[in-house]
Image 1: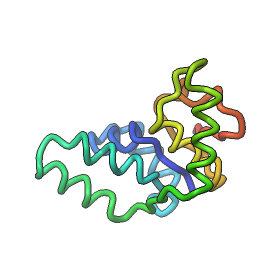
Image 2 (image 1 turned 180 degrees about the vertical axis):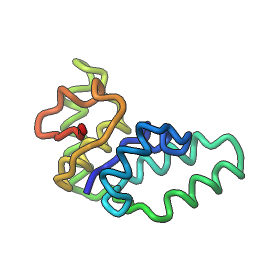
Image 3 (image 1 turned 60 degrees about the vertical axis):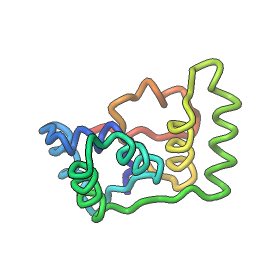
Length: 124
């Protein structure tokens, strides 16, 4: 199972051929997202038609909810990296999901996560 960052799902929705090929190699049944990604996608939808499209695409993907372990880990990541690396709350929650679920994180923004200990980033 691979956890996809929001930017990966955005690129997939834009039909980016590189991202589509990588997701096909991973296998759609092995793709998951954090509920934070779902919220970011819903928030960024331009209109109700786009929101409907996003919901349709997410319907076949496993969505991990935030639980106490993820919250505690994310809080620790913010404490450790917010000032030194400008770690944002959504990225901390996504990283904490990856760490706590023992999943590689597939992101187009490795610089946002590479400094985090215990995180495994996906690369083909």
